[in-house]
Image 1 (cartoon, rainbow, N blue to C red):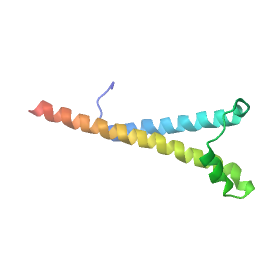
Image 2 (cartoon, rainbow, N blue to C red; image 1 turned 90 degrees about the vertical axis):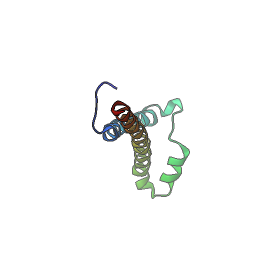
Image 3 (tube, rainbow, N blue to C red; image 1 turned 45 degrees about the vertical axis):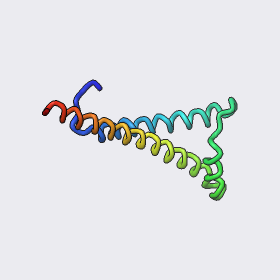
Image 4 (spheres, one colour; image 1 turned 135 degrees about the vertical axis):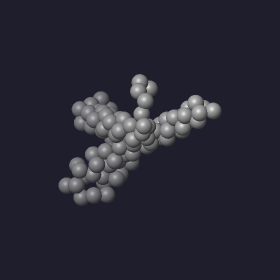
Length: 97
């Protein structure tokens, strides 16, 4: 919104990656620090981790949440980037006519 860009999709994917990383940080903080307050990983993540040996469950759970958070962040960035690219294209066409 504050500057023109030649590649809105890439720009929004980068922002989406940061959004995904912020989700990871918040998830881990809630589940590790605030577990006593009732914040726990979703059942899907727990079920996924339960498929592994107990020694690997401590790696599987954060890996699952990292992948899901990055999919949310990058997916959001991609959708908004496509919307921005279409808006840029429409704006460029309207200036030429």
